[in-house]
Each structure stands twice: as structure tokens, then as C-alpha cells.
Amino acid sequence: MAVMDDGADVLLCPVAQPEDEASVDVLWMREALAEAEAAADAGDVPVGAVIVDAAGAVLARGRNRRELDQDPTGHAEVDALRAAARRLGRWRLEGATVYATLEPCPMCAGALVNARIARLVYGCPDPKAGAVDTLFAIGRDTRLNHRFEVTSGVLADECAALLRAFFAKLRTAAAKR
Image (cartoon, rainbow, N blue to C red; front, top):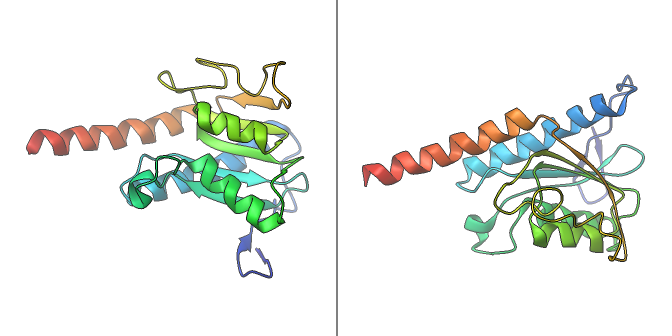
């Protein structure tokens, strides 16, 4: 692991990284899942995000922080976008790929458009708020000023299982009250 001047870790793809895009996507989605697990451990909905630049270096990591920060915009993607923009000293994240464990909501999908990312890879769909494929096509809508490539379903079962377990635990705790 390399260390940036600001002391933050930057994880580079292994030297013997997989040749195919699907294997690289799995590698980075596992990193996003680790962020989602950390969110759950902190009592927040387990959604994680990792932003990787075109060279294969992690620009930022994010996780849901709505409960922790009492912030309605405390979504994993927004957390990661803010950190990546701070690290680079600019809001445009051209060439970057965002890995998110859950299909982004309208707010997050709009933020991805505004950040000018190149690609989004997400794990499981969000039937209630998914704004990239499920309810809307933000990110591919030709009426918008920027569009990005979308790959869905990477480690979808693992991403969904983490969410199901989190909400089952909440329901069990609520039933005991």
C-alpha cells in the first residue's frame, strides 16, 4: 500500500491484477463491501463505495453516515465523492470508476453525473430508490450534460445479503421493545 502526502492510504491494484474487467470489478466491489460492513458496525445502513482512478489507484472510500452524522446527504457515494474531490483538489473526477454496493438513489446518481465520473459499478438493485436502472436512468439520460457507463450486479448476492441481515437485525430489535 502506498501512502499519500496527506497520510491517507492508497490501495493500488495488485501487480498481477486480473486481465478482464469483470475480475477487476469483483476486486474493487469487495473493497466497497468492506466499507458497507463498517457502516453497519457503526449502526448505519450498510452501503459502501470506493472510487478508483483510471490508473487503478483508490482515490477515496465512503460509507453511509446518515445516522452517525445526522445528515440526510450522508450516503456512501456522496461521502466518497467529497473525499475524492478533496484529495484531487477538483470536483471533476473524469476517468474515475465508482464502485457502490447498492444502486445509487436520485441524489447520488445526480452527484455522479455532476462529478463527471466515467463509470459506475454497483452490486444490487434498489427497488425503492434505484435511480440508475430501476426507477430512473440517471447517468444514461441523453438530456443530461454528462453520461457514464453502468455495470450492475457485481457481487449482487453478497451486497443484498448484507442489507437483508442489517434490516432483519433492526426488525428483531424493534420487536423486542
